Length: 176
Ligand SMILES: [Fe+2]
Ligand SMILES: [Fe+2]
Image 1: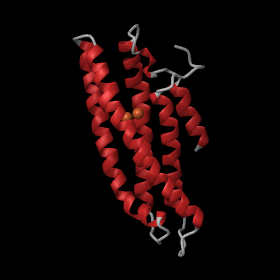
Image 2: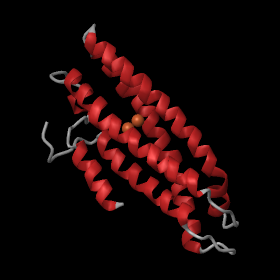
Image 3: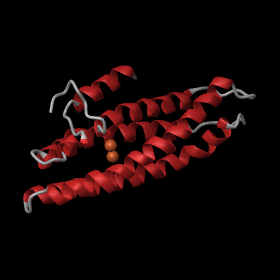
Image 4: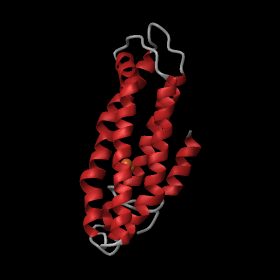
């Protein structure tokens, strides 16, 4: 697997887009929102809501229903299986915690998306952006390398666990 040609279903590639959107959420949390709501704020709120429901939730679902199960099935009994199981438990718990955190900001976001005035909770938006960054970093630096090792030489390598992920995180950090 090379770093120059990312596979189509690249889980780590998906993180770049997710992190960029959460950075936009962080930025929106800091904006002084006027009444009536500016059209660009409304558009941004709308985009974030759609992105969360269509991409983020789907990403969590795909990891849990596909990737995690496949990795558990292919892991060698003993230390490898134990490590995979521990990481998957942590990542799955983090998905639920992130989804819970999202609830703190969804109500004002929905209002803004409809052009109705609402104040974003800056602390909640920042906390969510920070939490997602930590989740993606842990997944990329610990879980995806293990998953790649477990799936090496199987016909599941094409799942896209390429290890250019740290590079991705740096790109995203530069973008912020
Ligand atoms: Fe995840
Ligand atoms: Fe992920």
